[in-house]
Image 1 (tube, each protein chain N blue to C red):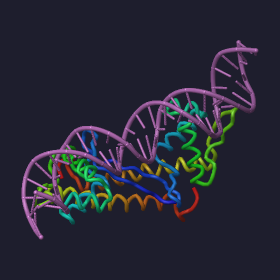
Image 2 (image 1 turned 180 degrees about the vertical axis):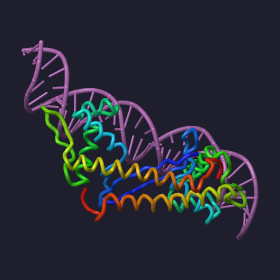
Image 3 (image 1 turned 90 degrees about the vertical axis):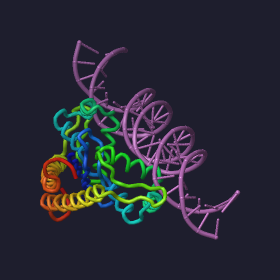
Image 4 (image 1 turned 120 degrees about the horizontal axis):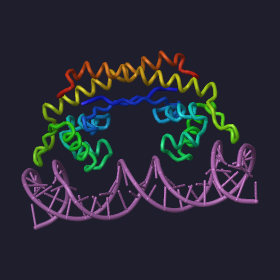
Length: 111
Length: 111
DNA sequence: TGACCTTATGTTAATCATAACATAAGGTCT
DNA sequence: AGACCTTATGTTATGATTAACATAAGGTCA
């Protein structure tokens, strides 16, 4: 038995700003500089990736990527800051939750 | 912007043992003594509730409810222990995650 | 010019999760 | 006997999410 926890950054109206999937997208874009490459890497359709980015931008209120037909796509400063903050948030939450889990369910076993 | 986090107890094979939905089911059964009443209370179909209980029992490896056609349904001792442990786990994880969120995103505002 | 990249968007198809319906066995109460 | 509870399960719709397909504009390179 183990713990699986997930964290989402949510806008005031309930829309998703960041989750683990969108983190993976931003990280891939940062690496590849292309939405197309990101879609292939994450085995998603171009449209899925693009729609999630647009959703994040809408809920976040600021652009997170700069998309250019010639030079490709890169993160904005605010997009990079959002990515890094969420990554740290997620890491620390997972560690904290795991500590709680070990405290309540010691020895990994039964209830 | 706010944080929404969720916690699941997962069996070794990946099956779900507990989540917030199943916690609500066990709590309602404990209160009402009936799967039928629970289904109405949670606005779910009887089958949905029943299937989730069976799934939990399968993944947990032990029965969590005692169902009787005459006297209704009540929690087993192990079911009650699981419910209470998960409730405490979830509460503490949410508090811990919220502390992390406030630390990384102070002042509630922008990135 | 034509094949191949990129972003961008709409439309349609397929898939998956859930809801709804049906039925059965068992029992109580009027 | 009939109406109403309960658990239990299978089958069938319905709905929602996602995948797939199509198209367009813009540019590069051979």
